[in-house]
Image (cartoon, helix red, strand yellow):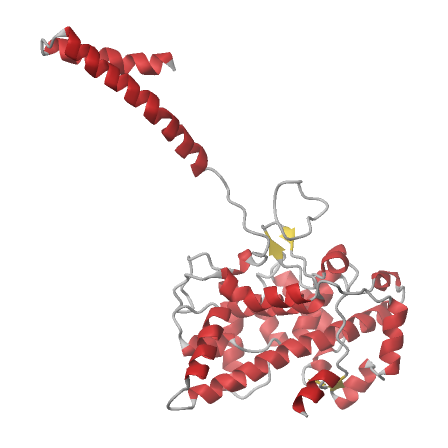
Length: 358
């Protein structure tokens, strides 16, 4: 430190000597130089340290990885996204359910029997009982019969996926009603503004909203949930209601056991299973990585064809590090378990929904 101070002091003295200035001005100017150095050095050091700090997201920024971080405009969207706007409804759903009760497997099975909810019946009648469970039972990993464990998992997750698709279908119907009107009310304009934020479209482009606001085939969502959780047996699913293995680098998540203590990603955790399904659909419908998925889905819509999970799954090779192998596994799960039987299934209204209609 002394050396760095003395060097500029010597130079300034030589400079003054060359101009035959008196000793008093030289002392005065040299003192100013030294004082300036001592004052500015801590500021420079502090700035350098702060520049390298990594600021942590707050606990609610659970889907930071789904944003495009201002780098992508391939969808024709200026990526200046507000994460809270994008995920507000997911946060709300997550916060609503804080006192959930975990039912054991035998109680859930009895509930299914009491409501006559079987997959065979669903395959025949295409109707699903509105049995909405908030947590997976811990005993699911103890079901040794693979077929029974798979069916049990599907029974739990199927109504959740259908419910989220219903929400999107209703929104999509309202969207097309608004588009086909020559004039829109203030209420409709407010609803559109809300959906632009929800689907990460600050440019307010209706054509992009039409593409993003759409369903995920039930069979595809079921296959991904099965793959990511080992049919409901993974630690992330049982401890964090994480059905789709989504990552986060914020504080809210479960650390993989083989990772370093303070390094790498975490798997997002949710208070309820429904929030996990909604977050998964929002990810597929907004992240730039899945742009080709959305384009393929839009083309199927334009041709009047059903949303084929085997076709759309080809565009999910970036969902996992295994790439095309991941796609092959998904397609195998869909085919071997006849999951496309559930693509046209309908969720029966709950008693609460029926009361609201009355």
